Length: 231
Ligand code: MGP
Image (cartoon, rainbow, N blue to C red; front, side, top):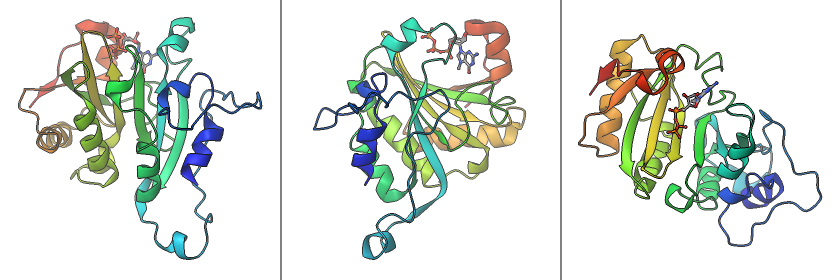
């Protein structure tokens, strides 16, 4: 069951993401995960019979990742404290997870919460992301919950015409504002990138102009990287 597996997947560094209800980190001392390790897998053979028959399989399996600000402060290299916290492949498991992890407005400043296609790491270094980029919507601090949810639903529900170009979404909780970014695979595919940007804006009801940055540019120029596309 999703919540039970969430409990066992929790580690001190990922605990902040879990809602307070009755979920606590595993106490066996063996709950710490290694970077890149998928700690929770949805076992499709679980609950054979009636319950299993009611599961609605998604087109892709997905993984939530989390980077805890206090762990980040101790990290030596970017991404070293980022952890995959749970993978899901059915609608039911998505909701089980979504309802038991904090939404962005409840996360501490500095936190990063990701949902990426399973087996794609949310890093420029991942081979699938390496030639990609991202669209970003800036939202006032604490107001990104709806954008986060609608983006998740659009992604996992395969609402995008160029859904195969999507890697995943991240919400960065920052003191100035929250940022929700949609990561894509082939940044130079302008028509697909622009189509995704336009559709995303509609899906999340965004009226502002948004920009697309190539990861290559972000790596070379940091915060000075310029938008290559805007919609
Ligand atoms: P950022 O994407 O501008 O956002 O990354 P963030 O985390 O909101 O930054 P903040 O300062 O506003 O809090 C900031 C920096 O993190 C980049 O300039 C890189 O140094 C590093 N960084 C970000 N990403 C997504 C990566 C990545 O995928 N790989 C590596 N190696 N470094 C990254």
